[in-house]
Image 1 (cartoon, rainbow, N blue to C red):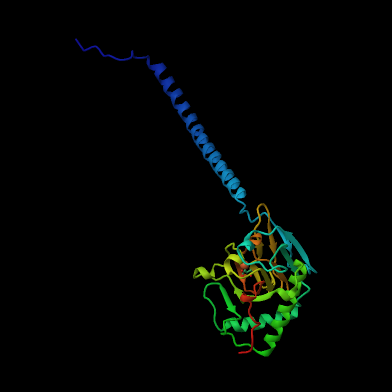
Image 2 (image 1 turned 90 degrees about the horizontal axis):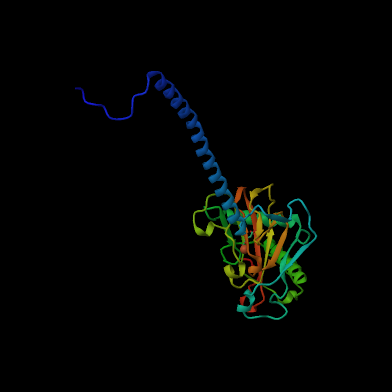
Amino acid sequence: MAPQRRGPPRVPEGNSAAERRHANSTKKDRLPQEAQRTWLRIVALGVSLALVTFLLWSSAGIDDDVAEVVAHRGEVLEGRFIEVPCSEDYDGHRRFEGCTPRKCGRGVTDIVITREEAEQIRRIAEKGLSLGGSDGGASILDLHSGALSVGKHFVNLYRDIRQKVQLTIAEAFGIRASLLYLTKPTFFSRINSTEAQTAHDEYWHAHVDKVTYGSFDYTSLLYLSDYLEDFGGGRFVFMEEGSNKTVEPRAGRVSFFTSGSENLHRVEKVLWGTRYAITIAFTCNPDHGIEDPVLT
Ligand SMILES: O=C(O)CCC(=O)C(=O)O
Ligand SMILES: [Fe+2]
């Protein structure tokens, strides 16, 4: 006798074919549905990740897109001043009443230095910086290093500019100009889009001048080139929670501010062209004062 086969009873031939057809067709339907579900899951995950990143990014206050331009390159500002509360940075230093900032803030003016003066001083900066400088995008020429050989014209021009800027700062902050002293470093800067070679070339980091340079109480920047004419990128940004404040450089524009952390700032990376500026800083401490550059 043939051994009895165990297992499910055999189904009639006709039925089995029908079921196979049915099974085949549901498998075919299921595949695209599963693929669809997988894609939906991937898209949902991607959207959630993007949302979380955006929320973290904006809550960290590093969203450079949220920026208000307080000085456009095309406008000629008589004077714009914004007062901000002073930081405590000045408390750690000797106070000089009538000079050490009690009123803090930032200002921009286009009428103190003429575009002609800016042009003349830029030519000197170009010449001076062509003799040397970094390979890495940012070069400075310290006006008190003694390495700069300057003519009488530069000495007079620098002195006139320094005096006008000093008076502007004194007036804006309600202090006596005679209590301000020029301080180190005071320098020309030239920035282009060449890749940074050393940490010194990384000019774009946010910083506080009083921390970086020590003796600074009031910083001023005289721009010697025009944003979007001579270079792209390279705008100056005051970093503020929620909304940064941007100053677009323009030849002859003077931007000045108290040097403490109430004026945390950075410079955007220069994307093309060359940007020239001169930093002129003042201290209230006569021990940290320096003379104007002299003929060498
Ligand atoms: O060139 C500028 O606009 C700013 C430079 C600066 O922040 C600095 O020299 O400390
Ligand atoms: Fe600075």
